[in-house]
Amino acid sequence: MTGFGRCLESVDGKTIIVEIKSVNHRYYEFTSRVPRSCGYLDEKLKSFIQGKVSRGKIDVGVSIQSDGVSDEKIEVNSEVAKGYITALRRSNEELGLEDDLTLSRIMRLPDIFDVKKIEEDEETVWNEVKSVAEKALERFIAMREAEGEKMREDILSRLDYITGLVEKIEKISIAVTPAFRMRFWNTGAEGQVLV
Image: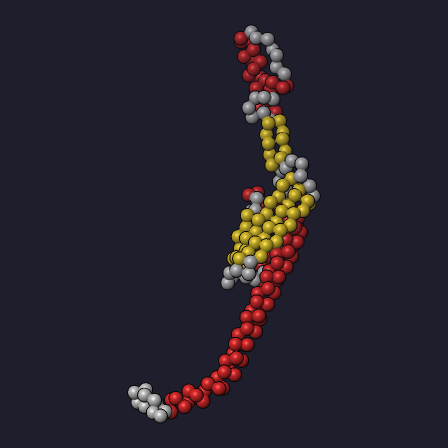
């Protein structure tokens, strides 16, 4: 059965979106799209959803965005900055130029800043994603159940129609059977009616 469930929530300074989609499939088949840095979520989501959904081609998408809080740490590479200052002052002495080094000028030089991604605890991230995934899964299951109920009603209405046709055929066949018997008994070997 097809189904769709989506949930968007803000959790601990992050906006987390989980979308679950499926199409009919004989077995349980799982694919996911998670942020590159959160590849560990793939197996956890697969097991979590398989615990509640036994079949179907399931596609899960997860998006995690920081709400104004940077997940990067910026530091000044002091050794590179000192190297630049030493080299510039040495050049200044050799060339006899005015020393006009300022912090703003040094900060424009390449490789002065180190930008590092802050590592998050995997278990914390999983618990945050799981809480959102639970709600998306509830909506997904509700949609599949609603579709299943519609299919059941359609099958039952078709069954009622077919049962009605069978009853009509049975009533008509009671009157038709003796007439056919009469024709068969009064026919010759070549199909000619013997009256």
